[in-house]
Image (cartoon, rainbow, N blue to C red; front, side):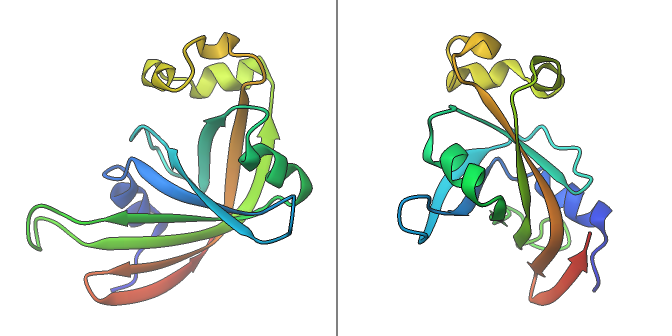
Length: 146
């Protein structure tokens, strides 16, 4: 079964944590770290994450914005009520420090990571624009160009 962007967006609503892979600034190797979307997803090909400005993710993206996001969901209910979904999103990241843009994407749950909220020194919003999404769902595999 071929998935649409809307199908992928629906699957993402059940996924809180993804893995963000960048090319490391120090040695050009790959580095992966967990990121949260707080399940606040209205996915249209863009993913949004907050990070500390001095984090390795922000440094890496500053040197090479090409990234990969990995998502997985293991349902508690069997199909057709639940679906096992794995997503590999290849795209380009952008670092945003504009307060108004950060306010549009802020959620109070994020304060668990940033105690000073939007006033956290160096707070950076990472926008990831997907180019390709490779997916696996209940044994089916496919790719979507965004």
